[in-house]
Length: 286
Image (cartoon, rainbow, N blue to C red; front, side):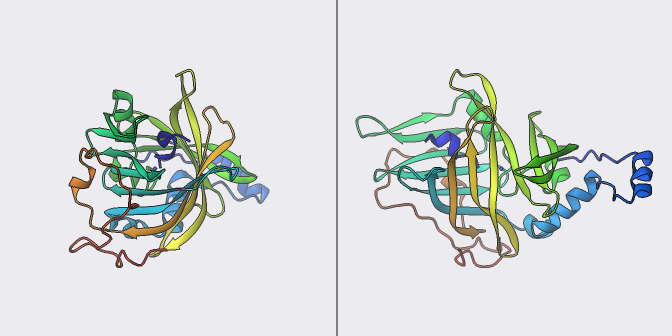
């Protein structure tokens, strides 16, 4: 299991309106017309807990474990810390040491144990920096798209695991395009594609599935995130969230270049809410 595959883990609106003739034909046939993009986004925001509630979230911390989708291998404890607009710190405990990926909004670093047992620190490569700049952390590219400078288009309707879903394309400020699927009944995001490379180093995509939505502080959050293999292969990794902290106190220094020490006491974080931050106390996690 690679840390890069795990750590992933998330739009100025171009409205697509059905033509008058299609709408009229649908009305005559008694079949309700498909909602346009604006209506889909409105219902999706409401389903996820409301746009204003999400805007109040400045930081979010997930703790849980990573496992193989087939149940083989050990469960690896992880912590994923996120701070707007795109600061991230992902730690996973492996054999009493900690492997880490940190991005401060401009630069990134990888800290991991080496064959000698000593920690090894490397900077992100150019491709890793570009990839780290793209994710719009905490709530992704669809929610509050216009404020994030992301352009959305409604491309069609697909079936995702037997359920009807609207396929959207999100053009991020960097110019990168990402596909997102929104369930046609729940209006929750159920799948998205992220860029990756196959074993030969060629660009491809990886499918990410968002499952087990639960309500936390009034927000709908997927507590299970499953990742496939490049090129649409089978699901191999599962990230399971056991606890969430909202608006925890995460100073920018937490996302700076890490030191050359690995943790042997587990992963901890200051879950006290930031001074003046909205939201319930972060200690009320699941």
